[in-house]
Image 1 (tube, rainbow, N blue to C red):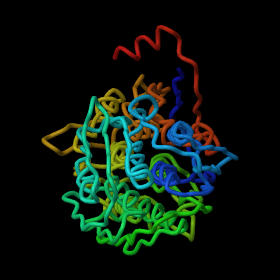
Image 2: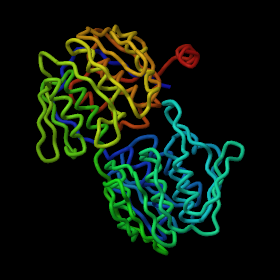
Image 3: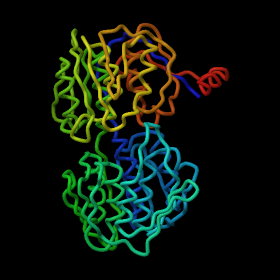
Image 4: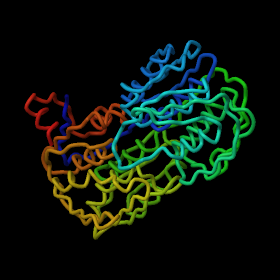
Length: 428
């Protein structure tokens, strides 16, 4: 096991290239199951979640090869192999195997998913959609069993706007007989990305990006080549880091329209930020203003950037309030930031951040992916050296984080942990 060390106080400058979208990749790879011939996905991020999904595709009989950022999947020999345990429990997005395998084989057995614990995240809307399409869904010994004689199109209203349920129902419905209508659908760019892949494979999908998606089932899907969209959350994380410590930072390979809510909030905080085609220019200001944040479904402020922005608010004048309406339990970073001298308190469902505060280096632990990003930004700001453990969370979603920050001028490196450090980390 490794730990991440950051010597704070060094300005960031230069250019950083954004990788393919993690939240797209975790759905695009299971979607390849639905094809009858070779699928190539270009521009995938080099992260552990992608590696895990590639191994799961091989477990069910696929042949997977990787050439840099591109992955080629041969699904011809895939079978409805049960996946009740093992790698499927490592990440929450493994639930996309439910929709893809149900759509392909009319059956699936998938272990209840893992990933970052962000409080209760039920999959009841996924199950509601599968059942509406004609599947029988049962929970047996910690795994979800899905069985259908055939899938038929249906009108499905999502009680809660859910990215995962929207994509999963879409995967199950593209080969169902007749038309499926998903109402109150999520609108995230990653959903459009998955629909683009499916359309390139021969699916008939309309309305993606609105709250009503119409899918006319087709008997078969063929292979294709698809290029993934840039990761708006990674881009947002670097934009926040640049707002904290950037002299002049250019963030390359972005779609600014996907980041409008963050860009608006950073401008409200008095950050120097400009967008040009597929790039952002970000530089910190001498005086940051506090803002209030309420996370919402897209195009609202993304929950995945709530934690990194919490760190930035410690440097702003007066107090800012954050309310996460998506994952109300996404608060484990707060105690770690307090170790670093942050002034943060929780009142009811609100996080109140007071500043500006000089952060101090400390030993802290990432409890989930975006909490890890928040601590990295805190380390860049802090006096002295910050030690961060729990890097398995960070590696799930950020490609070459250490190298990318080093190229911008950060003093950041990894070290192997001693046995005593590992023991202490595992028991805290």
